[in-house]
Length: 224
Image (cartoon, rainbow, N blue to C red; front, side, top):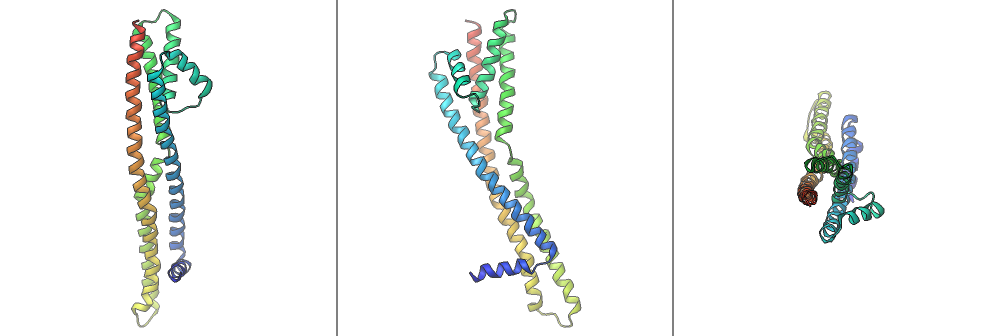
């Protein structure tokens, strides 16, 4: 308890610039943890949705029936379901027009699926740049607060005839708190960014593989 009070005292007695730096770092830490929990929920849901849809897709004998079921029950489903709906919808529309060649039909369906894939990529990568920014800049922001606090402490020694370590230590301690808070904000953000970036890359690879596999299925149907 005493250590907590001493840290609070150091923050309360720090200079205005150091306190501003600490406030920015604490806010960045809170926001980064909010993003961390949000991305964990989103990526977990995306993996589960991909597993469920792949099972339905490969066990379904009628793609038209699967498309109707998705439109009726999961109109807002993300991931593979969204890519499938976009591709099959364009595929059915172009085939219904009649004059288009098989290559035109297939290319149109692939374009629609790639547009849907791009939307899914944007959704998965949302807020990840913020984690990267917090992880890369927080230590430097904390270091700025530390340097400023140390400068402020040594400047105060100019009015003292005899300088001792007891006079400098409190000011340096106040300044070093900024570096500690900067690392406290940066380390979780860096770890989370690296983990989530890898998860997003795996999901995108999975989406792209499904796109190619579904394209081959459509190609076989155009020649049937």
